[in-house]
Length: 250
Image (cartoon, rainbow, N blue to C red; front, side):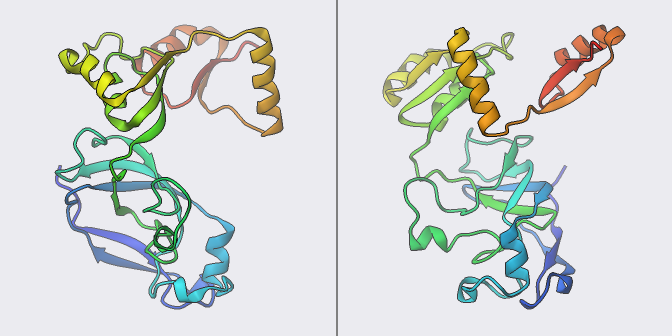
């Protein structure tokens, strides 16, 4: 399927009140270079979005005209530019970073000028182009749940001397891509690869205290009744879930 050539977005023609938001259609080009095209699935509203729309932000010289608001979004990549390589692929689920060009380190005037829904257009749109760059640095840590099928991709994504924490083998039936180059990539990246098995009771208690203090909630994809345990296992096997698959006991 060809990428869309238009998108719908909400726009603030002026900064006065959020009730001024109007729906507009704009043209949409294909991603180039290191860009990815994202289909937005959901946008989370922040207090910043409200004060910007109501002209209460206080630094309006940083806000662009005819603003597409909002900075927090989750979506799915539907097309990638030629230079993205294996970093991202169509079908990957992604979310937006507040400052689009703040890749690492402390904020600077340049990175502050890349704030979504303020200095640059935001995410209250059906489709949006994002830059997939990492400035060549890569990420610090990868939680590797895939195993053999995704380990090479994780190695490519980390920075020099980055960490890969291997905790799963969901892709256990997938042969290791580029197996001949795997050791060379590990050496070339000076990568740390750490296997995670299980923890002690003390670590379990520490984890639970962390969960309580930070009010963390588990992500539950689907709950099956007690007598549908076979369906629950089939759903887990399908790998269609995002979050935990649960069987209700009582």
